[in-house]
Length: 113
Length: 112
Image (cartoon, rainbow over all chains, first blue to last red; front, side, top):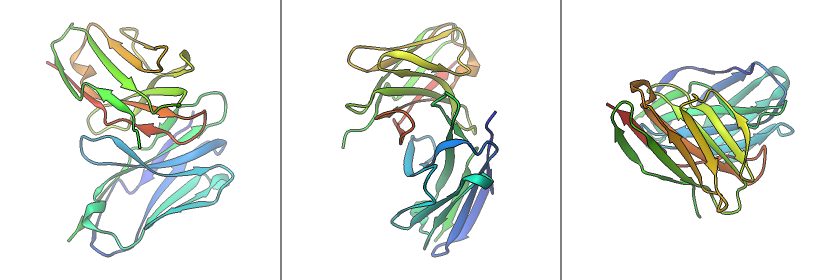
């Protein structure tokens, strides 16, 4: 059974700092990994999708990397801003028939002005 | 760009009542997923549909049922509601299997 872990559970940084969020998964046989942002009580906004054959994806100040063999992904946020404050979730689709996303519990990020 | 639309956004029901949640996927997306997110929890997969047929099933209680209609919208029907059913319910759609999932804003169900 696929399990996704995100470390740290919470992170507080000053504005302008570069930061890294970590995601690990137990079954490396995945189709893809997706990073989401969730504001309190709101929906999930897709940030980046990395296919299993890819090593990284970039969108603006965000860069996500994937090391499938070791079951790890990182989300790098450059020059953090208070508006980046949210919970960041990673999720994977595992090979083996099911198309469902399996989520980690998220990292709650607070960027202080 | 069109997004996944869910209605209603908020719903308050009493115990033992019935609730129906609706989801309108992004046009030309053929797969719809339902997830439940309890307070402080990660989203848990309930059920999915591909081309109007159920394709996968997760930890969905027998009190819940869902279907996808000919216009691709989906409905999640929840009966005999319990206090523990209070949660955010998300619908997501993908253009095809194993691609980027797009989520709606969710329906917040409160059972009192």
